Image (cartoon, rainbow over all chains, first blue to last red; front, top):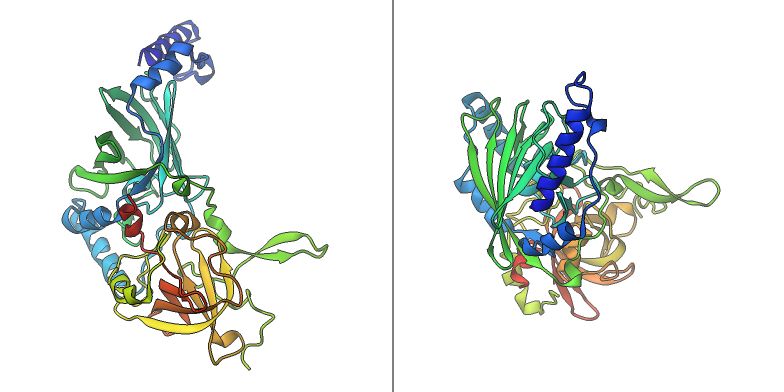
Length: 283
Length: 131
């Protein structure tokens, strides 16, 4: 985008004027107000509006046919997790309600996502809760030298024709490289994700990913995830707060509507005990 | 909207992909299907999983309540559900995969409102089919 170049040049000029003492003087870089031309230029990009639901059948097919190239000692852990799941004891990778992180938000989510394309940035919003947000900077910036690690990492992107190209680094080491909601291994540091997001059909999106995770993979893992677009209002993303499942509705001592911790089993399921404590145990 | 006639029970039961949006459904035994008849005690329209609590017919008290787990409200809405699809005191027949450890819980498969005959499923792959 032209706007991205303008942002970059403005930022570079500011950096040049700034004192060089700090490796990254973040305060010296500011985002110019987007111009009308930059807003108009978005209309020339592929239309990513609407609600994108993951192709669940394809997710499962990928699990079967294209597993990550786990290091041998990591494969032992993966085999153990599969065996536990087969025995009815799945490890709940996400029952703590922490964000999926990258690349799992795109790879194993069972909920819809949406894209907001604005000057210098693409934002991916997930449905599971307010923490499923990815900010992808398309303003021409370079990857920072040492960004703070986060669940989704630091993402810099650009448009290569009709394809959104994204590089992501600085992903927290605890973030799983997950292939399902029960099988995944913490990346243990150094994981990077390259993505190419493009439309295969008007309402079919491909997310082509290359994951490098040197602590757990023997080599790059190339995989694709598919998303289907819906425009019906019934498909719109709604706020879904993951941790709400950890609470039940009660009244406080003043009669106000309030929350109280719920009783769950170890797998995140609500149990009837404190929901229906007005019912006798048995009659 | 997935309002299925009773005759489609068998076809719907063949859909074995989980309804989860948060955790694996492997604690439920997908090789077994159980149908219970009872009365809705509570229908919790809440993330990450909607939960249905049913007092099984012929029982009373907490020990006769089944806890049945569904997918998220957003996914259910895409399948034609709403937070008022099931209401307390509704008489239902609900089909589920029971918990492997024998507790009164299950992974949802299908529900039929006995008064109206309306049925609902919650398989995520049906979202893809709703083109």
